[in-house]
Image (tube, rainbow, N blue to C red; front, top):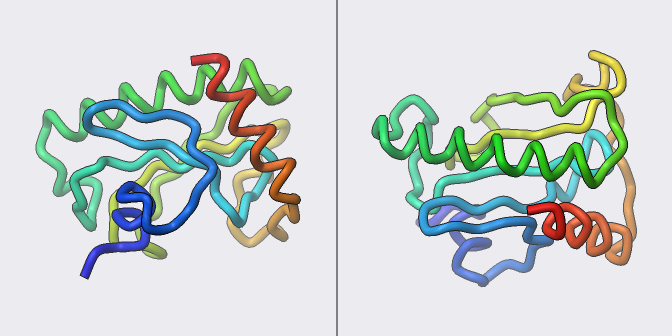
Length: 130
């Protein structure tokens, strides 16, 4: 059965898309730690990030770097934090989170509550920086 992320890529589940290339896809996390929290995923469904081929891993990492630069330009923050947990969805993914302090990256923090209009605006601002 396809992961929720594969279903998002296929257009079966809506998302706030930020970026896409031939091999990767980026969209806003709907339960963000901070406004602008992005998930970068490979289009090829692989559960564990370190099971990606070297080419897929490199492609995803460079894609995430481009998205992180756009994120930092679009959402005021000191840095963009990176996290790879891989426990919540069986599809490799990289979290990009705008940071003003280290504790902004704690996944035990309360999630932000945003409106669909806020999500759409953030996604558009990030996409415009790419």
